[in-house]
Amino acid sequence: MSDNAKQQNEQAPINLSEFRSIHFNIDLQNLTSGVQVLGNTDVTFQEIRKDNTVVFTLPPGCCNSGHHILFKVVRGDTPKTEPVFQMELTAKVITLDPMRSGLSQVKVEVLQVQQAEWNEFLKLMNNRQDLINRLLERMRG
Image (cartoon, rainbow, N blue to C red; front, top):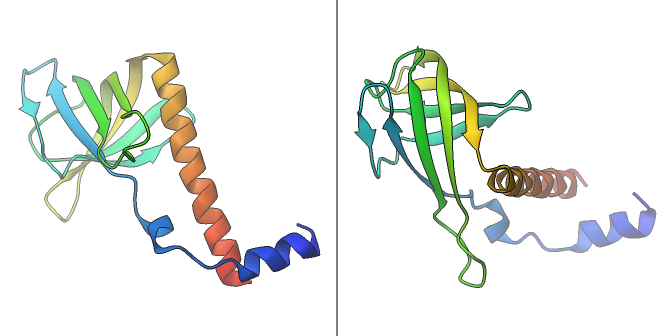
């Protein structure tokens, strides 16, 4: 980074809205058992990995290893000036680990997703990570 860019970065005020998390509403249907989880705020993304796996936090009892799950993902905090991000993905449960909170950490392999939606999702998450990295850099000075 050039000295001029560094100086501009240091002088730029930090906007508190930059610290807000991206919020997703995630519903799921267990295609193996028929169990549905709708509108549960415990369903969250934990990790999106490059090996086509995703780690979710899920409520207990909604799936087991080997089950196939349909996730319906909608961005819940979309600015009014942008179209609402939506994505459906079908995945297979690889591992399920209970957490102290009573929830489960579930690693799934993505089996089917519209490539354009997946790419948009990855771009959204990468942009968010870039913003976090820039904020940390500004804070370090």
